[in-house]
Image 1 (spheres, one colour):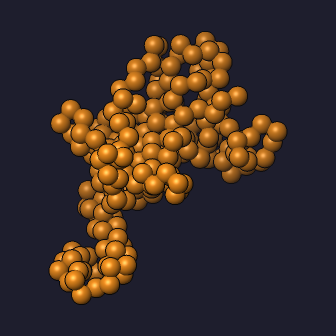
Image 2 (image 1 turned 135 degrees about the vertical axis):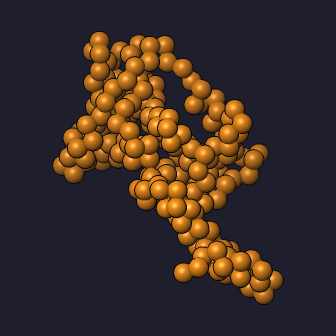
Length: 208
């Protein structure tokens, strides 16, 4: 399919296409264009899928169902946020963007600095095994058994395992930036950074 040509035909004939049909067709073609751009850039499909899953499905907060946009240090970043996790990068995956006056100032979120930052590696195979074998228990978040990350000084943090996997898929790194200054179940987000590709993610912990 020549998606670029199809996009041109649809946009040039906007006046002759019913408004509702036009929006649907344009949305489909723009998504295909985004996929092609992503593929041309050598990006894996699971990166885009992970980003899409980070968009909210809550129609009462429509602004979270679309990509947020902010220019930080001269770079335009596109962020997917659902209130529990976030991904951001210079890549527009074609999910649509919310109005500027509704956009969340996520710059303040990603510039947060830990008191004692440290790196903890995640065993992705172990995480995936946890997701496949976890069963509902007395301690579960909406049927999700938390995945516990343990690190120095007796610190640990509970995360939604599926959210963590999406963050790993999006960034393609197994390194978590955590706060070694937090004791017990962590109260601060964990972050993942792929500096080379400028792809980043954040996951909020599950409070005990």
